Each structure stands twice: as structure tokens, then as C-alpha cells.
Image 1 (cartoon, rainbow, N blue to C red):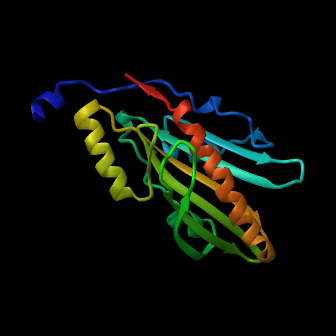
Image 2 (cartoon, rainbow, N blue to C red):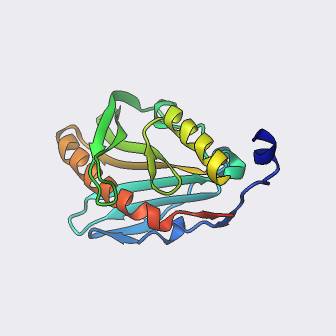
Length: 198
């Protein structure tokens, strides 16, 4: 069995697709953004999507997706629990929350982080995704999914998905609600735009 897996060859990304995610989602229109080259080099993903979505009322949502194909091990070593403090944000709260999305029959657990820098707050929802429609809230679950994917399909690709909203203290509850609603839209969209490996 081990020899068979080893001799199958490495799957490679042939279509990234994520860049085709709609530029307008639920009344929010996006503008593309980019990190410095040094950040992309550090993240080392096969595809990055970094956008700022805004609606007519001026509400803003940031979306980041970093996709890692099988050849890159399917996951990033970066996560908000390390990156936010490294950027000067203090973590005020963290927990799991459940999202409802049409694509999934049961509520999906994802991670919530509330961070603070001075008088500014950031509400963050993030999760790992594998095989297009497998939503995983932590690295252990992702490792198990990647292992099974490698055995049965010769794939262990994955993505890190992060939705964040900046607010003041009085706007946290509204920001959290918007982050959940927008994340549920992303959950419904991602399987149709998942990268292809062969």
C-alpha cells in the first residue's frame, strides 16, 4: 500500500479558479488588494485571494484565501493566533462559532477571534478547507482529512480562509453578525471555485 502511494506521482495544480470568485457578493462589491512580495514569499501559497468588499452603506469586509496544493503540503503554518499579536493586535476573545450555509446540511464550526489594537477592534472568522467542501476548524482535523485524501485520491490540498471586519467597541456585535453572514456566503461559493489538481 505504501509503495503504491509513493509510486503514484505528485498531483499538481492545473487550474487555480479562486481568482474567479464573484467580485460582488450579496450587495458587497470587491476591490483587489495585494501584499508586499516578502509576504507572498513567506506564505508560499499556490494562489492568494485578497479583497476588500464594501456595500452601499459603507460596511466593509476583508477576505483572504491562501490555497496550497498537494505538492506544497496542503496547508499554511500561519494563523491569526500568531499573526495578529505579531502585527501588534492583542487577542481579546477566541472561540468556535457555527455557520449555516446552504451547501452544508449541518451547521459548520469555524474559529472566531476578536482582536484589539488601541481603540480599534477586528472581528475575524477563519477556517481550513480541503477537497473543496470539507470545512475544518483546526490543524488536527485538516491533517486527518489530508491524510485520507492522499490515500484515496492522491490529493491533500487545502486552503486557509479568513474573513475580517474592523470596528470600534460599540460596533463589535454588528461586525460579528456581518462576518458570520458573509462567511456563510463564502462557504456556499467556495466548492464551485475550488482549484483543480491532476
